[in-house]
Image (cartoon, rainbow, N blue to C red; front, side, top):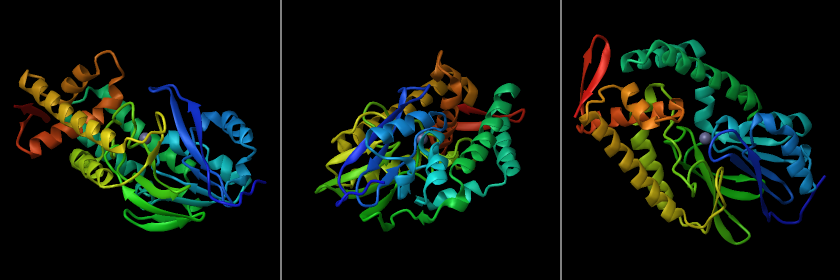
Length: 320
Ligand SMILES: [Zn+2]
């Protein structure tokens, strides 16, 4: 059992994953009440134990788990920590409602949106299955009955002696919170999947559920909130720890604008449906992770009047 006199060091624990950029990081904030910020991916339990052991910790030593967002690569080892200790689990309040969602209802909405988008049947059923599987898997990993503290957007709370401000940063994931705090005299952001230095996170928000229409606006709001923060250091879930939040926010703004412009250009070139645009954007990469971003981009462009749509044979077709 570890015990430190002061809330001090932040240790980065990185794990291999099968998709770009090839790793995910969570963080252990060392101190009298050790805090685990996010919790790796489910298939890396041995590595998780090893990383903790390197720091002279065991899963049962964790006294607080602080979750940024409920994606699988950020909550995978919550059950390991819960099985061996009795940590206080803190998570974004929006997750409680999301996880209470009836899977059949979710499937119906995703199917409806995919039918309207004109997905081929196999892609449509894959999307429905991914949505339901994610809901069931993620709510088993981050069991809402085991969450002790639901943090609201903007809330200020004390977590293991750290005063944190929960900054709502949707767009990549609708409930996502970043946590601003002070550690060792420095203002830091425990950022999850926002404020990543090497790349802009994909727009997933609520996937292909109905919130996709607001995803680009939500991402913009998140970037506004991040731009208003004064922080010395960012601890993100992917890529290195860095000190250039302002630069990353500007890069993300440009990247979102480029995406919208690129999608609009594809529509102008005659790519009239969500799958046609998504396939072209994906090239030889896996199209699945670009589908929510594409659907969200088209809905956004239509709302701001940059494209129009009409429904032909039950399928929404876009025109620039
Ligand atoms: Zn994520």
